[in-house]
Length: 306
Image (cartoon, rainbow, N blue to C red; front, side):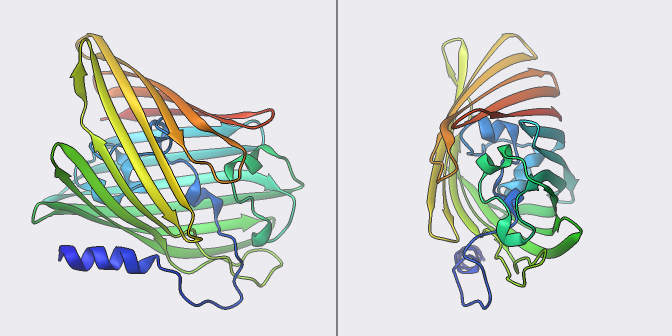
C-alpha cells in the first residue's frame, strides 16, 4: 500500500501531453499561503502540528487535526485572501473541510492574464476577478503511516465569465528519529479556461517533501523548526523553512515569534517572512508579514480554536 501511494504521488504530477495549453498556471489561489503560521515560517507547514489548515498542505495531517480556524490576508487595498478550515475525528481517522476565497483585480480579461505571483496582487486593474477552492479531506493511520486524500472544487471568475474544475491531493506522513517527515502531491486535475480565450491553463501541480521537529526546550524557551522543498509543474524547485520560538511565562499563556526563509521565483517578494502568535488555552491569535519589492506589503491575521 505504501509503495503504491508513493508511486501515485510521483506519477500524478509528472508532466504529460496536452493540447491548446498555456505555459502558465491557474488559479493563483492554489499557490498562495493557506496558513498564517506557515507564512511566518517561510511557507513551510509544521507537520508535527494538528490544526485544520494542514488540509491545504498535506491531507495526511487531517488524521490528527482538530479545531476551527479563520485567516484573512490583505495585499494593500487591491486583493483579499480568506481561509476557513475545520477538522474533527471520524471513526479511526479524521475529517476536514476548508474554503479559500481570493478577490482581486487584473489588467486582462482571460485566464492567461491572471497574475502568476503574489506580488502582482498589489497592482490594480480594471477587471474584477475571484477564485474559490473548497477541499474535503480524510486521513487515517495505515501500518504506522498517516495517509490522507483530499478532493477539491475549484472555481475561477474573470469579469462575467467563469470556469470550474475538480482536483485531488494525496499525502503521507511518518515520524522517524524524532522528526516528522511528509510527502504530498497536490492539484492533480484538468486546467481552467476562463474569459474570452479558448486556451486551457493547467493547474499548478506540486510535489512537496517536508519535515519538522516537535517543540523542544531551550532554557526558558521552546524551539521548533520546519522545512519544505517543493517541485512545481514547470520544474521550478522552491525551498522554504523557518524557526519558531515560544515563551510561556504562565501555564496556558504562550507568546511565539517566527522567522522564515524561502526562495521567491520572480515575484519581487522578500525571501524573509515574519510572524507572531499568542495562545491562551485553546485559543490562538496569529499574525504574519510578507513583504515585496517597492511599496506595499501583505499582512495576514488568523484566529484558531482547538
